[in-house]
Image (cartoon, rainbow, N blue to C red):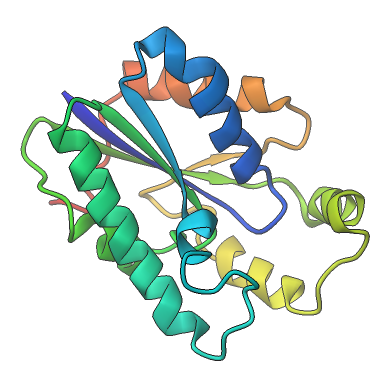
Length: 184
């Protein structure tokens, strides 16, 4: 069985940290048959400073490239691919990724959204980069709209360690089937 696991959320919710822990600490216990893709890193291939006036087009390219990477992993012995990103918060953007993946009846797709309260995210951003960017409030509003969508599993990770958050995700993908919302 193959699994594609999307982990979405606003800037500052902990996606990059989860990806780092997954690939450095958890992956080896799965015989390195899982992969974690940080979509921000894929985006940085074309816009290192996140300042391009063509950001929307470049983010779509990052989603397509993430889909190609995912497909390559799944076709070459990696059975579970985690995709972490701010750009996979709605159906259209997830489909941009999945359109590049060969999916069959044995492929399960999961979508999680990290949903700590705004106050907690602001604290994290100030700790990480000393300020909250001007665009953050609109960025968060865009994503909050989807917190209760049928196809995502919300996780308020505000009082959890990254390992605890990953533990919840791993437990769910072991015990539950994915959603057919994106593939059905």
